[in-house]
Length: 168
Image 1 (cartoon, rainbow, N blue to C red):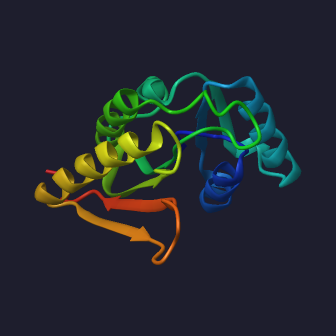
Image 2: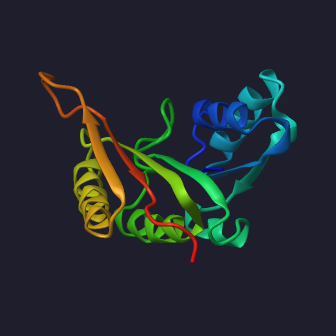
């Protein structure tokens, strides 16, 4: 499994709990503070043996994961909470990495993206990710959008896609 945006480690811990002793989680982030925070959270949960951290862009995940060998890829877009809000995921790189992720996923694998349209670059990025996901629906993937209703400001929302098809 892949945590494309390790952040403070919440998703990394979740994925490590899912893979158990027989699996591996690849966790990526471009910020040293994020890697340190995620590493500490994973260690505190006793899951360090199942996680491999990479201080690099999620756009390089294909260097560490096999084509059609990944069960799930999770993105939590935006910025690292409690740190510099100017350092954010970038729309063009995120969309390119979604395409990379699609190739890494096994058939039936899950792609999860939490979008944050409430910050400066987040609205543009959320729209681009949603457009990318919608196109997967045309390719036979099962795609869903989960969002809060009745919020005053643009609230974060989840886009979820399951890779369609079966191996040939």
